[in-house]
Amino acid sequence: MQAWRFWRESTRHFFQHWGSYVTLVFITNLAISYVAVPAFTWLTAALMKWQHVPYVSYTNIGSIALRHPLAIIGLLLILLAIITLIYWQFAYLLLGIMNIRNGRPQTSRAVLGDVFRSLVGASPSTFLFFIGYFVVIIPFGSELFSTPLLNKAKIPAFIVTYLMANPLWAVFLGIFYVAAAYIGIRLIAVLPLMMLDGYHSHEAIRLSWQRTRRHFWAYFSKILVTLAIVTVMVTLIYGLIYLGQLGFDRTGFGLAAATFNLFLMEIITEFIVCYSTVIFMMVVLSSHDSQQQTPLSLFSFREPARTKLRTRLLIISGLTLISALLVVFNLVYLNGLAMTKPLTIAHRGVRQR
Image 1 (cartoon, one colour):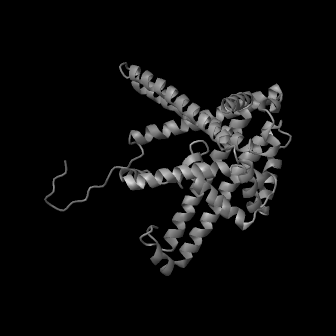
Image 2 (tube, rainbow, N blue to C red):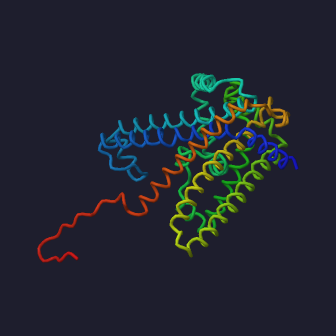
Image 3 (cartoon, rainbow, N blue to C red):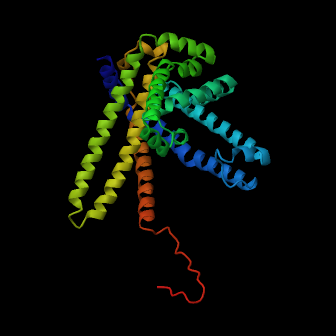
């Protein structure tokens, strides 16, 4: 009952101020996807080319360490930069969502300043804990909180398939997921304590473990209900689009309908990602002392009509533009328009058809 009440209040609050929430999450993900990820990809490729390293794998990591130590140092620095950026993203979303819930007393620049001070004040142990925390919760929490940087840290699907085919390894994998879920819930208050209150990682772990004692199912049920609702919602929406497309395929408007449906799915996907991220952050914030006992209805505030309209028009335009560009790219790629004609080279006696 408590989980359903939390989901209803959180969803109601989200849709009351969806323009502000979607703008926050969408712009952050946009910067990560189209600025940070290409930059790190280019840096890694340039480093490998400079050090004459064709690829990095567990089969050649030893030889790279011996023959190309600068490549190892460079990769470690890139990894540190990625971890710092993930920390920034999580902290910015956490502080930004709390700022919106409190009626936006701070500007975006002030929130960025708080995040920067949090980064400067973070100790090495904080980053070590941050790495371990996300390694633990990725298998469980990434369905609600996803980012292009964290998505690259997932266990590859072919490895999971291979492990599930072996009964013994399947049992170990199941135990790992259960343990990850339990530890992730018990440590759910750590990051708010570190980012909002400035606690050291050791003290934050102790306080989180203490606060979540006998409350595991309360937090777990909030995440489970949200995940179930999002899954059902996505299945219904995509199912209706699919059934509609089956009908259009029997007419002369199949391609036009498919293009529009793809555009619609892109917009819906972006919106659901923003919604899931905000609800997940609200679950995390519910573990914080200043938010835990306060009903979400008390966080409602009246936005100026002009500000609300401007924010919603801005985010609708952004979602429409990005979705349209993705649809155009997919159409160009699937129709082979971006492919170059292969060059045929043959010796005498070969006939080219």
